[in-house]
Figure 1 (cartoon, rainbow, N blue to C red):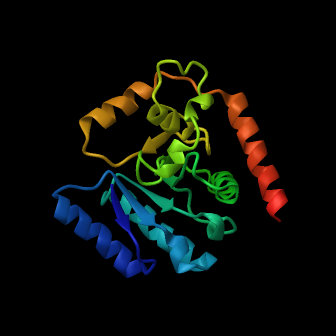
Figure 2: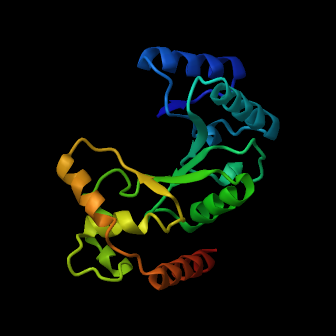
Length: 203
């Protein structure tokens, strides 16, 4: 997985070619990373995505996609259908970003949707000490809070996979074991209702 930041077509194509050279092989996925930071217009965004789509078609990478930390500036833009859309997922995602991510999925119809940063950067964030996230699981007696946070990220918003970054094998094993647990969708729906209510109260 490699990330490209520029929206300039020539620089994008060059970045994909360099990535393949640096890795010694074609990357599995190349992402246009956080394009919302550039506040792109419709034409610039579509052109940048077309470059990545062409690169994938030419065999310079296996697939292409867009990763967005805050998809709100992108929801009214049209692009070639991406192979992968990566968006922030989990209990720390605000309701506006959550709804924008889902709107983007409906508009772009990516082949796959991945979540990222389910722990907000760390499993020791202060937020995880304020409540027990295991309420989001149907059978949580043997689950850890970390496993509950990870599982809930698959529903907020709905994603096919959730990416994490760690070199701790125990942490990875804990997350793999988390996939045996089932999320309580009724709790997720109630949680989302509370988020919307809170937004109305603050408006």
